[in-house]
Length: 267
Image (cartoon, rainbow, N blue to C red; front, top):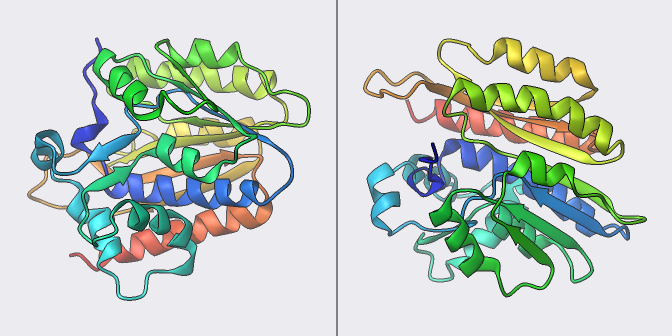
């Protein structure tokens, strides 16, 4: 059943960590000569109107990107991420929030390629509206796991794959457990980046350990203080990145530490 729509959660704490790490990686790759082939298995709509009824109903962005923008001196590591948000909102009022497809479209170059998968009909239609005119981008209404495995980088391309599922059900987790080893074998030189929620009950611990054992990589995770008034099962967020450069692993960990410290101050 397709029910998850990220518009209700756009710009939240998990997005801050995920997108700050993604921008650090993409801006680094865009400074290199090698062309990039960027793939998303669960793209959603890619650009969000925070004045929409869905975003206002979810109301998660004020405590996420809103808190970062309130900082008088944002950390330098956040600059690749914040610069695009500021470009989209030149009057200083936070209205438009770029999802990962929008961030990739901004940072990647004319000779780079992108492929976005989205199965939800409404999200796919919005994704098509937002990026259908960009000749660098293929947009596919298909299962991202199966569809992505049918793709391959061209000669000399650096492939980057972002996996950001909803984790709504146990089946979502099982699908990822089955898919990641296949992807690592299918693309031996590709960068894989996986967003993972951290739960109050620690249910992700075994899954995280499994992913960490598959291949060396970087894990950047941050938890936030427990809110007794919240019904959310989430207690934090993490990014697992395979095959990124050591300096990017260090930067990702520093971004996570900054996030955790910022959220701790909100108590």
